[in-house]
Image (cartoon, rainbow over all chains, first blue to last red; front, side, top):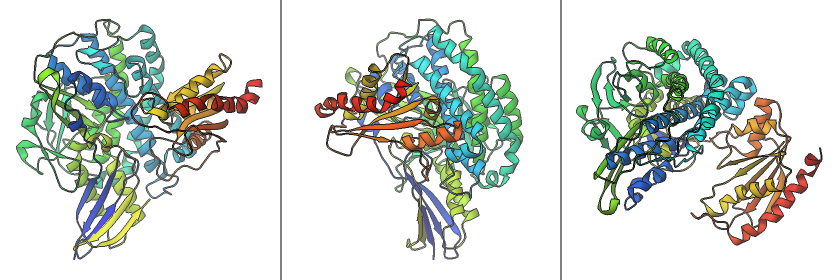
Length: 473
Length: 148
């Protein structure tokens, strides 16, 4: 007789989801599923709109990473125009994308995940949040707040507003950067850099203390995918796709994102609204791959900035080949914050950064356009087809969290096998399953294009589907 | 310095009343005495500005009450919710300000009950008409801080 446990919903992530854990007649975990239960349908209601509207419309998918959708969408519309946008527009898009990476990673690390490490997985759930962190480590809480604030200020200085800027457009961007805006960014940069370095040093020093989590939080061989530059360096806004395997060997490289469907298939399951992308040459579900900070650091040949390259060398000591534990997404996030701050400084030093030549004017010349960029949670694709009058006839969005769907399911199964025993749910299990999911920093608002809030509930089901136990908060 | 945290989404009809209130109230306060932050939702970083302020007024729409009904009440620090999400409440902002920055000023929450939260960029007549009364109530509460 088998049994099933359900965690519904999961806390401190964006969107709605629940988890079911299936047990056999001996109380052993046979399977676990991460269900995404909300649906919004952006792909459908974008149909019939002018393609020039899509950057603004699709950026509304998410309040945390609107810039990623804005940029991927603008790049898809650039492709429809078949234009090479001005160099300054490329630089500014990079600055904004990296600023969003910094603010989103700071939110994930300091506000959402640090309570687990600072206060402990088994600490009182009522205190295990950023206010609890502020009680015991007020300086860390303040630094996290300031770092995220700086990232948002950069977005505001370049793109005009912090949330849902409508600044990236087909052909470039709508406004140049002012000298005052640049100087404001630079004024806050030393503090952001100091926070990034200090936090990374602390976490790297203490990483061994998380040995148990690193061992069971999504620690398995898989492929990884990310955009990289021509020399294999980190490339968050442009670049080509690279896949590496668990040994860190490159299995496919310099793939134009417009050809993504040759390499990525999208499976569906009846129990989730979240699609299950997979690496097509290996088939489904064997073609499981991961995206996001961990994947980017596993895929790149080098970071491309001095301090991040030093940090990357240390990070790679965690694996033989690729770093496999999903727990190390957190570590990778900190290295990317450091990289982002360093790289923004480099970009702002470019002599063309204040140029007013920021947008190309063109008419549509293609019927299909694909745009891709690295969102904080991984590679993001916007794929549009347009028909008569430039009206959109088909939209396909491949979202970072969706691409980690197979890996998140496997992570939940691994954690459940380690921590579940018997027919009752323990608080420690809930905390660790949540934390395992949170390592991916999933954004279900993006990945199902769904809205909502998330709590936590779990169901335990028997082999005949009977509900044995449930827990929620 | 008085901080006005004006909350809402102007693209959702009456949800934008917090922002409208922030602008109307700021126009009645002495120049240089007020800082207005407009936001869709409260975030942890608002705790820093809160801790620096002499007094804070949170301005927001509510779905509770007859359209245009104005409510004011003093905000008190509150223990955090069990599952802390990305958006915080005024009570939690005060709690975070006190915990992380050591200071939580006196704070008032002013809400106006909305009627229409659909995708329009205008306030309903009832809500628009309530703005002067809401501003007067906030000014009355702020008067001791302005005098000092």
